[in-house]
Image 1 (cartoon, rainbow, N blue to C red):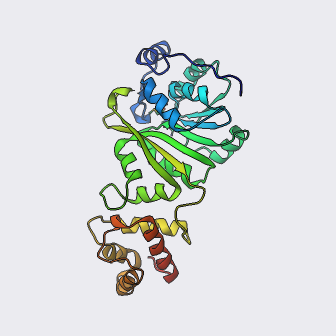
Image 2: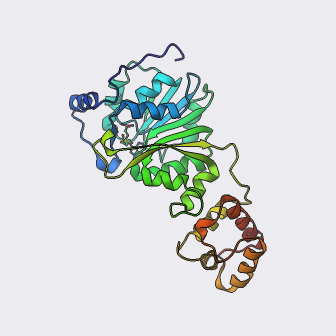
Image 3: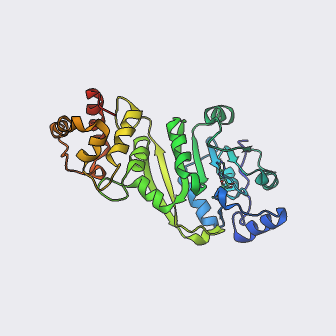
Length: 299
Ligand code: SAM
């Protein structure tokens, strides 16, 4: 599959081509599956360019729809595997991708698939794999957390998601967008907003604004913690009630009887107990979780 790359023609992902395919197969959109198909070739090209693919690299696409992004990916990557949940799209994809031997379509729910096994069977010959997708918005966070928590050997994750979620993922401490999602994503990745896109580049048009975000997966997490699960529990607890101080939120985590000891510990490690969780950097959360862990405190 590493021969010269064929171009699928200038009309991939145009409104006309998309409408033709939909009409030919009598397809009707399912809102419950987050089906908003991209109909702008420039946006498709921007997504593919951000993924830094070449003929030795693999791309995992989640939710290929009618295969517009899939075809663009196949022009650049050596191997493309696309996981689609909607059985009705499988014959359409077989038709659209008939002359694309480098593409494999897998029918399934990405949240239920064994992705480690999928990587072994699909990408064994690839020199690096990235996830590239226009994600179904109703499951953006569970999909991304599954990709990251399973420690799949990924280079980049380039995805179209709801703009507000992209901003939360890339947020720095101190603002209202910064929360446990920012910490979780930045623990595993370096985020970069690629572009925002208007509703008009999809059919049907979603009710929310969208953005493309690029997550470059770190070789090792951003901070060193004794126990990841515990670290994320401390982060969740610190953001539990955003208007409360860190000391108040953490009291619920360690128990009222330990409040004084806990605030003394915060002072000792140089974190003012009167601060709010949203002002803490990843390093500070790591330091906090190390100290709470060593003290053996949690409810
Ligand atoms: N990639 C296409 C495009 O850009 O035009 C379609 C993107 S559309 C936003 C999301 C796609 O994800 C749909 O085709 C939908 O059926 C599929 N999908 C939804 N939930 C899924 C899941 N759990 N696993 C795999 N695919 C899913």
